[in-house]
Amino acid sequence: MPAKQPVIWKKPDISPDDLDYDSLKVIRRLRRFGYRPYYAGGCVRDILLDHSPNDYDIVSDARPEEVRNVFRNCRVIGRRFRLAHIFFSGKIIEVSTFRASPDQHADEKQDDLYLRCQNTYGTPREDAHNRDFTINGLFFDPIADEIVDYVGGLDDLRARLLRTIGDPFQRFQEDPVRMMRAIKYAGRLDLEIEPQTARALSDCRGDLDKCSRARLLDETLKLLRGRCSPVIFEQLFEYGLLEVLCPTLSTFLDSSPEGECFWRLLDALAGLDPKLRQRLPGSVLMAALLYPYLKEGWAKAGLLDGKLSQAVLIRHSGKLLVGIAEKLALPRKLSLSVRQVCVMQAFLERAAPSPARLARRESFSDALRFLELRSLAEDVNPEVLGPYHRWLDVALHSKAEGSSRSTKNTRERPGRRKRRHLEHHPRERLERAGPSPAGERGLPVERAPSVDDWFDDIL
Ligand code: ATP
Ligand code: MG
Image (cartoon, rainbow, N blue to C red; front, side, top):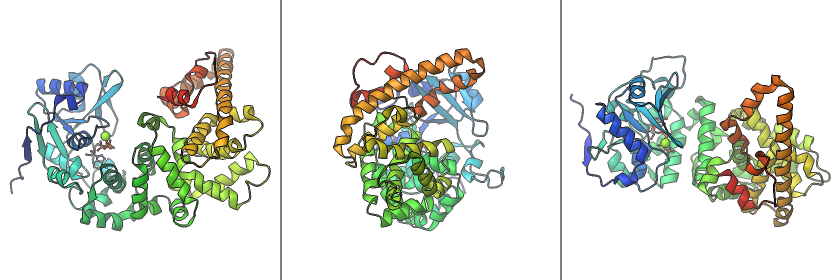
């Protein structure tokens, strides 16, 4: 039987102004070299829904090495999943090659089927059918000015329906992360989940346990960085996915009055400026998820009565988080900094007498940022924000001192070179989320910085 022809929507009324200029250059150049490039995935969906896309992904029949031959500013990345990255100032355009249908037997050692099938090249039709949801399976050719739809995505977009491409039970079993993605799109784009897809979500939710923990954590952090995390987490909770992802948290939300604080923190997070939210380090995001649960645990154990002990609180938090850290595969470093950020809240709230000692801790600045977030969630006595500026000042000075000390040390001890290099790696710096360029650059801090400076600096 001949393959069904795609639906072509000529002149979909997408102006070049809706597109990213550099990505358009990439498409034009690939076309000039005889390839067949399209915009694909999220950017096509978002443009048609009048949202501004996060990024502009391109797919074409050019192999990664061929793309590299066409662009000087290109690097092929990934050993298993090869992609071309084309570099422009301040952004990267990703160009992938049409993927073939998954081969169930290829590389059985890789237990994640989605990851298994990523490197076999195919046709545009196969590529579209490989994608997760119909609304994510559309291609846009800006030269011919047409949308190419192999999967019924246009009809679903018009009806605002989220539907898997193919049998939802099979697609969710193949790659259970798609279930989290389904909830993400439904929440973020205000779509209805098509009934069969919704049934499969409920029935297959247990499979979430089978997929790569690193991908789940990644997806969770992405959700927290998005603007719709409250509604998405509500849906994850309603559909019972949260129960699989993190049973302790789900039970806490179900049974504790402190659960309210969790939802308020998510609301506060979602209300932040998007650029700021994107830059928040994992420890602050995870603290938003876990702090209310930890606080309840400390209160139940009587650890907030009388004199606080940092060591005891950290140890007890470790016990409370053990199951969660394992379930979410929190890396050790992240798990420790989340605990520190949360535990420091108890001290900050009491305006503890020795800020300098606390300020030496690596997570101090993140703890301050989380305190600020909590204040937006009305979870903090406003009086605490008075000393907040003093704390901020201490953090800036302590950072400035710390960095001048460490420069001295590295000069004296050449053996530490490698570590210094690591500390200055941009990703590492972002993770540490240096909120104070003034302090980091060792510039004198002329006045106590305001909360606005603090936020400006991270942007
Ligand atoms: P966002 O705006 O959140 O980036 P997106 O749709 O661009 O949304 P990405 O994670 O960037 O999502 O993925 C790009 C595209 O790759 C998707 O639109 C989809 O077509 C495809 N895709 C991503 N993950 C999967 C998956 N697990 N299974 C099938 N297709 C996927
Ligand atoms: Mg994307």
